[in-house]
Image 1 (cartoon, rainbow, N blue to C red):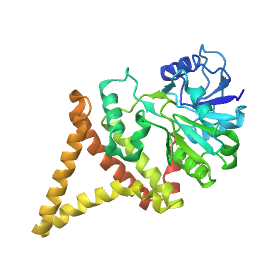
Image 2 (image 1 turned 90 degrees about the horizontal axis):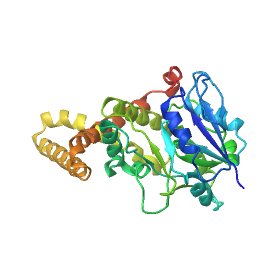
Image 3 (image 1 turned 135 degrees about the vertical axis):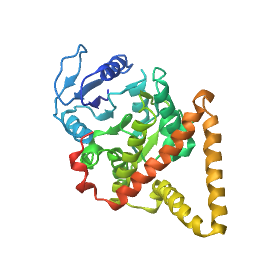
Length: 320
């Protein structure tokens, strides 16, 4: 039987991790080990796990350390604020029967117990107006080849992980994107499966969500400067949108003909965002409306920042 190593980086051992471990203890497939990597040690009442204090280092460094200790043929990454469905491992192992596949994962859904503002954040991420990444936050209709998957729900063959030298530890986020790109460059495939499910607590709207989106944009820009290809241009679309909004405003002051185009564009954009927001729970539609706009601008500004700033000049002082 194939053995799986579940690797969980975290800052501290709290209620979120205990909820995660409780769900792991209920998994149908029992051929696995669990490796927990907190900053510091703390006794908890769950059995059958390895706890390895790491000190204050980045999540990517923790995951790489966890892999060094792992004995499984398949590595399963999950966050401490997420928890899996009972068939999580068995569904992933079925996918790996296809030897062309190097990485598999699936949706990370907003838990029902999340508060109102976190659910709003989840709704925003689910919207098609967040781009192709929206598939990560909802149950798709069928399996799909994708560019990337997040480390809150990601399985990879250990031999491939070691071959590409694991996660890039100089990235605070987007290290999962780089790992997926590295696997694709080997000729292997990355697949989303709708039945490989975890539940992942969301950042609350508006401030925490905006910070997260800004960091995502910044880090993906840093990554694309090193691994650019024309297929990845869509990652920068929101930055072009942000530039048009701000420079278009200046141009519209001086040219009346352009002002009509500019205002029409903004009204169309706001209408599309509003219409998309109304497709969700009506009582959360207003928050989703402003949340989508905030997401677009936060990510767009973050991407622009990443384009013009070196990651090595700013990132080493950041841990989480």
